[in-house]
Image (cartoon, rainbow, N blue to C red; front, side):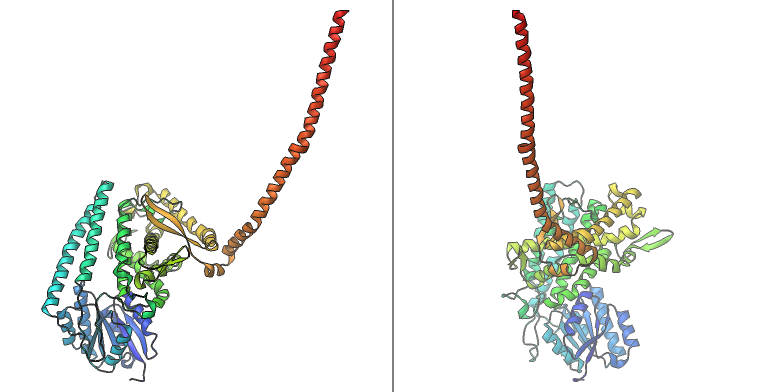
Length: 562
């Protein structure tokens, strides 16, 4: 088997991790991912319908401790695979460090185990080892008393913090809160979030590696492992110090007004204030969760462009399910419609027309995951600087608002005039059919105008317009960014727009100069030539009138002396 290609089956409900792992494994000529599954049913169907020689190794994911049911199902699936296919090696990968779960995995006959945050070089060694029927359990599923006490303390602290955090979030939803009360609750929540992050960092569990020569290093949970060439000099993930800051800051800004202060209609404008805030908070949570997943998925910086579409689609789908509920139904035209599944049918439209237009997504994720500098006004700023953090926050706010718009867009298209939807979500000013149709038409015109006029103009001017959360609502800012490659790809009407702008820039100064010259010439002619001529004529007329008056007066005086 050492000279043959290893054919792998990946089983993991996390699409982001599956994609990242597949892209990483594609770099090795002797390894090929021949199939993927997100649940046990699909996995067993693949194994049942495929030839025995078509799969050499199953990589099975055991997810985080917060999902106990999923852990049990994953271990049960591993047991079932080993029972049905005893000669098929199974490698378990996970972030779980609980001795009970790991012991169960070892007991059911799983051939190998490693953490999800294991470096790719070590993971490849383990894959080859397990595929060659060599047992490779790189971590002992036992912990000392101190580690157990520390883990219990961590979980207990997180449980208390989460309970208090939920209470604060509930209080923030109460109507009629003053700005001062909102600020106090937002500050309290910020303190809780920071405390939660500190507890996770200070009391995080550590894993002990069996020193068998293959794994000489200690792997710590939660620490991103990437190649040295892709990191900044201190080789430290920004997730450890900057990401919590920008996410907490954005969460605080969501507690204030979310009115649209721009001249551009947004899909989320149709929502009531409380629903708009709820949607934005859900989307923000999904973005933060994706970044955490990517930080443990061994994603490298050059993979981000390939994974951009998958990441955004995954965020969009998760936000729709989180906002509308996975099983929420409505009655429409004598049939029950599952809202989330019905809206997810528009995935192709969203994937091609909305999500690709969100700018600088790669820069934001690269900053959060790899501490790459951010360019502000053509000057690169390193990760910890205030300028870079401020720019990252702007990019996060823009991504947040665009994703929220993408969630509401299929709702307006497919269920926009359904009474139950209007009662549950819409603002009172936008509940009549006429107002809804007017709003949808405005959105349609916005996209046409943006596609054919505004976007080519922005490309030509080397800038982006981003949505941000200001103190009084949603505003728009303009930032510089080179867009030459996009500009070169323009065709048709969009190219004509840029040519018209260039023609105007070329002609306008000369035309203004010519108009100014003609204007000054006309003024000169009117004042110096025509004006003087009229003045001379007027003077002659006045002199004539004066002479006539003098002659008449002299004649009358002469008659008086007669």
